[in-house]
Image (tube, rainbow, N blue to C red; front, top):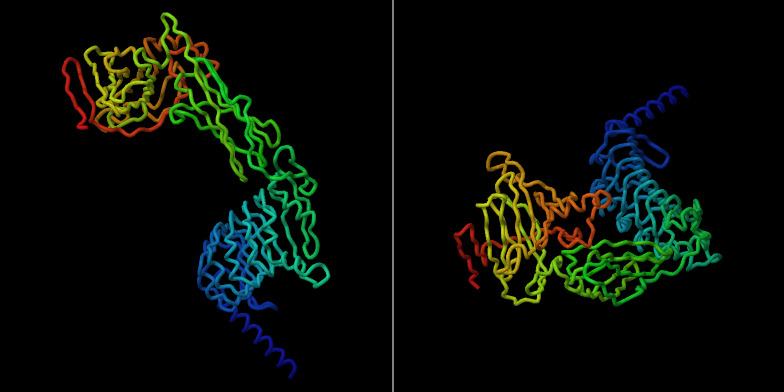
Amino acid sequence: MAFVFYCFLQVLVSWDTHAAQSFCLPGCTCSEESFGRSLQCMSMSLGKIPGNFPKELKQVRIENSPLFELPQGFFANMSTLEYLWLNFNNVTVIHLGALEDLPELRELRLEGNNLRSVPWTAFHATPFLQVLDLKHNRIDALPELALQFLANLTYLDISSNRLTVVSKGVFLNWPVYQKRQKHGCGAEILSRMVLALHNNPWLCDCRLRGLAQFVKSIGLPFTLVNSYLICQGPVSKAGQLLYETELGVCMKPNISTPTANITIQVGKNGTLQCLAQASPSPSIAWKYPLSTWREFDVLTSSIAEDTILSQLVIPAAHLIDSGNYTCMAFNSIGRSSLVISLYIQPAQAMPGLHSFSISSEGSAYVDLRVVKQTVHGIMLEWLTVANIPEEQWFTLYIETDEAFRKKVVHIGPGINTYAVDDLLPATKYKACLSLRNQPPGQGQCVVFMTGKDSGGLEGRERLLHATVVLCAVLLALPVGAYVWAAQGPYNCSEWCLCCDSFHRKTLRCPQARPQCKDSSFKDLPAVYEDGEGHRVMEGTEETEKESNS
C-alpha cells in the first residue's frame, strides 16, 4: 500500500512540473520555489520583454540578453511579482511608468547594464521595495529627491558608476535617514540599511563637503559596504580618501585684474588679464567689440587649486579694437563679471606707409571676406566701421587675369553682401572694396581661384576648392575657394615670399605687416540680400539697380 501511495505522489509531482513547464516561455525555465513560481531566461536573444508571461510569477530572472529597455505596460499581468532580476543585459532606458504594475515588488536588480539615469519617481509605484541594485552602470547624477519614494529600502548599491558629485541633501531627504533622526539611537530598533558608494570617480571639491561629513558621521542603522571613497580629481587630491580630505566652502567667482584701463599703440600686441578665484573652479569667457568678426586667442592657466588666470591676446591691434572687454567667470554657485577698457593709440603717420584697415578718406575700417559658396559662385561679405555718413556708398571691384573681364559694382547704403556668380573654371579672381570714388587699391582685397571644370552644369557647384591660402598658410574654410588676402596698395603674394621662411615655424605671419590679412578673423555664414542698391558696371556698359527706399 505504501508503495502505491509513493507512486501516486511521483505522478502528481511529475504532472505539476509538466504543467508549469507547459506555460513557460520557449527557451526559458519555469520552476516552483518555496516563495512561488519562478521564471529564468539565461543567455537568450531576448530584445524586449515578452507580453505573454505566465501568470502568478513571484520571480523573473533575465540575464545575458540584448534587452534594451523597460517599457511601460509590459508588466501588466505580473502584479504578484516580488523579485525582478535583470542583471548583465543591455538595459539603457527605463520608462517612467515601467514599474506601475508591480505593487508587490521587493527586489530590483539591474547590475551590469548601460543605464545613464534612472526615473526615480517611478519607485512611487513600488512602496515595498527593499533591495535596489544599480552597480556597474553609467549613472552620473543623483537628484536631491532621488530617494524620496524608497522609504522601506534596506539595500542600495550605486557603486561602480560615474558619480562625481553627490549632494548631502540626497540622503537628508531620504525617509530612511529621517526615521533614524526622528527616533534616535535607543528609541526604536530600525532595520539595518546597507549603502554602497565606492568605485565612483569622485571629484573632491567643495560640492562633496556634505557627502564627506555624512560619511564621517554615518552610524547605525547605516552601514557602508566600503567606506574608502577615493578621489579622482582635482589633480591635487587624486588618490586621497574622501573622509580624510579637507574641503572648503563653495563660493561664486571673485574677479580681479592688474589693470582695468589699458592703452596699446596701433599695430602692437596686447594682453588683457583676468584673475578669477572660486570654488568649485570657475570657467571664464570673454565678451568684446566685434567678437563675431574677430576671434582672439585666450590662454588659461591654473594659478592655484581655486584660482584661474585668463589672458586675452590681441595681435597687431587696430583702432576698431578700442572699447570695453568683459571678463565673465562662472561656476555652479554663481557668476561675476569685470570690465577692462582698452584704448588703441593711433600711430604717427610715416611717409610711404598705410594702415592695415584704415582708408585715406573718412578713416573707415573695411574687412572683406569670402563667407559662402553658392550654386554658381561665392558670397562676399564685408564689415565697415567708419566715421562716415550713413548714406555712404561703397564700390566693389571684381576682375580676373583676363583684361576684358572687369566688373565695378556700386553698393548702396545698408548692404554688406554680394554674390559673385557665373565664375569661370580655373580662373583667378580679385575682389576689392573701397569707399565710393576711391581707386580699388585703397580698399581691402580678396583673391580667390576656381578649380578645374568637372563638366556639365551639375558640376558647377564643385568649381571651388574648400581651401584658403593666407600668406602661404593653408587654412580650412567652409567656402570653396583658394583665397589670398591683400590689403591696401601692397602685394600679398610678394609678402608671402617674404614670410615663407617664417611660416614654416608658425601658423601666423609676422603681425607687424599690414598688407596681409590678420588670421584672427572668423569665417561666418551670411544671408544674401539680392538686387536692391547695386549698380553694376561691366566693361564700359553700366546699369543701375537703385533701392526703392
